[in-house]
Image (cartoon, rainbow, N blue to C red; front, side, top):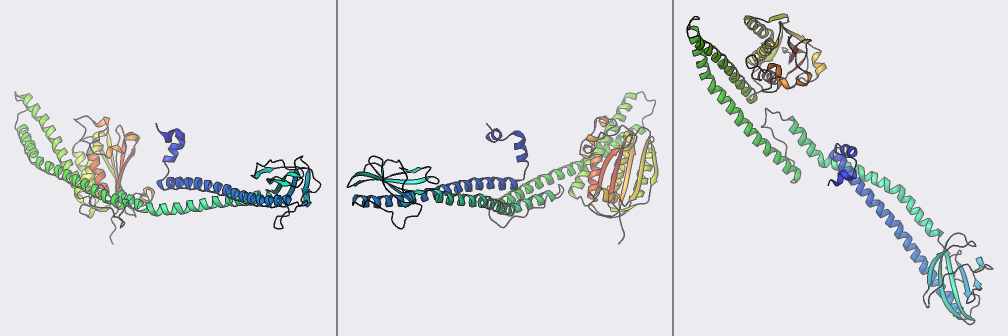
Length: 480
């Protein structure tokens, strides 16, 4: 059974769990402190009242005993000791209930007190009478006088006791919340200092890119749980980095080893097809060879893509130099035109120079144009321009200043809004592109995204009405 869920409503519990750890700990500590201080305040007021009542009872009992001694000695007009408060009242009552002596302030009053003392033991109590203002604390003592047994009553008002406890309670009502608020602020500050290393580790962990797992978290100097947590995270990063390096090396080695036999097999099939007469009786064999060549070509492209990704993962910075991006775009458009329809519109290409790796950027442009050709119905549009406002609008480029913006659009089926981020993930092929004959392996756009990121740029896709429009932003090269 979930006790916490049973106590708090579901919505309140969900809101509470979304608060920061610092806030929840501060609130929890403040609640505990508030309950503790409230209980202590109530106990203090109760204890003060008890002590004051006990002191008053002792004083009244002592005074009643002194008066009883005077009565037993035959003093018919006993008086309270001079140290008694002026508001203290005295009555001596005989066995018939008649007042035989009283203090000056209640002279002539009938019997006011009715507590019955025990044999040899004084009786204490609180009584209220209309002849006196407010409740009185009364001590009753039995005594023997020359005229017979009597009862001595000495009483004092409880108003001073109530006033003292009320003043203390009022001070606590204002003082305790102020103290709780002060302690809450101190607790918030102390928790902030205590959790600061956690926030530092969080920022450092968030800043570690997937391509640089050699970076480590700073270990605090204190030999405590936070230091051990940082060491554990560093150890985990080391194991993950080792596994990632091993995987990248395996992919790179496997792709590299596969390139040679695939190239040889492809060349062999092309030679056989080139020397096979079209009217040959073995037409089925020629068709089989053409299908095999097609699959070998796709497999070789996949191996090249894997090798490119492995290189990007191993060294995302690449080698940079000034590159005329418009030349690469023109080359990619020319190669696409040589392959036939759809038409390639290049009227929007402007001279642009960026700082980057020429081979990687050529791969980026080629993959975008190839992807657009694969899905276009009639035409592919390629635009390249310098945009000084885009960087400020997006705010996501690693470098400020003007940007080079490459746009490759097609008039195909387009990409649903929910899939416009997924298309840049590895081995993701949407339903429209899953045909083995026309679709790729799902690595082309992932390579585009990785190359753009390695050049401090970014790539995204939006609607083309109809079709899809891919945008690539790269920092513009500016000569120093």
